[in-house]
Amino acid sequence: MSDQTPGVGSEPLKGLPPEQLPPVSGPLTGSPSPAGIPAAPRQNVFIKDLLRSSWVTTILAIVVAMIVGGILMAITDEEVQEAAGYFFARPGDTFIAIWNSVYGGYEAMFRGAIFNPRANDFATQIRPLTNTLGFAAPLIAAGLGVALAFRVGLFNIGGRGQILIACAVAGLLTFNLNLPMFLQLPITLAAGIAGGAIWGGIVGLLKARTGAHEVILTIMLNYVAFYLVTWMVRTPGILQRPAGDQPISAATPANAQFPDLLGPRFPLLDWGFLIVIGATVFVWWLVERSSLGFRLRAVGENPHAARAAGISVQRMYIYAMLFAGGLAGLAGMNQIQGSVTTGFDGLIDAGIGFDAITVALLGRSRAWGVFAAGILFGALKAGSFTMQASQDIPVDIVLVVQSLIVLFIAAPPLIRAIFFLPKTDAEKAAKARAKAAKKAVAA
Image 1 (tube, rainbow, N blue to C red):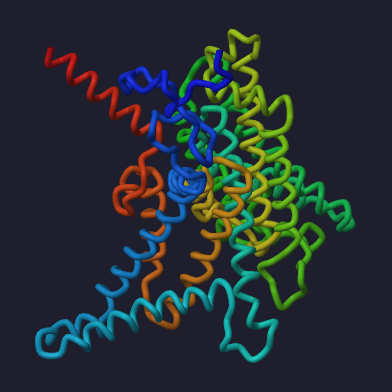
Image 2: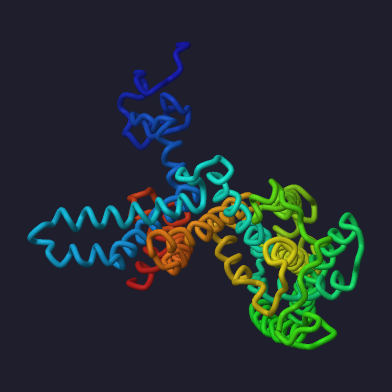
């Protein structure tokens, strides 16, 4: 009896057809592959998996949105329009004008959002970065609230109402206090977070007890909060500024304001940003590491299976909206305790409640993804002012870029088609199901 193990090149297997040959291992991966066909190298598999990842799709979505934004800058630029009038006579002038328009716009955005090399001293040069972080803080906080609700299967678009109620509750409390800063500041912060949590908790409670849809609830409560706060700031003795007839609240007391993080030369960056970092760590731990987070994610993945496993789905809905509202309340506190301390009205949310949805989508509903997305949108906001001031580019173009980012992220097959990226397994499975259904209908 021979000691040789039968293989592809051994005598006993020479006469077998290919479909009966045993699988062989690939030269690098060790995984089975059809007889005679070497497996793909590991680096090829890694590159293919990388190109299929959601992060690559997100980055490319941002790149495409910036390209489209550059096209809009060029189209709306008067010098480009003028040079295009004699394009066939001197085409080089048109291309130079397009370059100057696009480069000038994004260079101005960089100077306004990251670093200004034209400034005389280092502190002034890095001030744009501090402005970016200051603008990003409330976006991150509200985005975390939306993202957490997303993970539980809830679409929280009530950030505006939660921010307004948080500001109102904090204002009702802190305007009547005169405590030392180490007491009044945390009390004001806690009151605002609690106000937002209660307003969000109402949605969770109604969702859990009555089955009402959270989108309808949050939209309606946004209106309730807006008109309620508007009435408060117009009514003397409630929130209206004393000895004034304008619909605005009193200024935030100095004892309740966040101290500057790096000094008075950087007024937009305060201790609120550090609190937002702490909130990001908390949300990451809550969702990804805690037992409560496991139950929340289970409900988000499949509420019926979670209920069968003994998880109280109704209770998870309430918890999720409490946390989401509290994080929106933190965003409101970054407004009235940080950047807007001269008083507030029904527009104090400044669109943050709706921008938070964009931030959560861009961050893939992950805590650190939301953090990075908030900084990106803070940079776009900070840079837009410099773009408009130095290049006369409308701020609306930045809003278009933000919208395009969400559009492309919501359509990953479009991005993969543009850049010829490999399809994901889910897309392949969907295509196979579509083909099978078509064959079944034809039969």
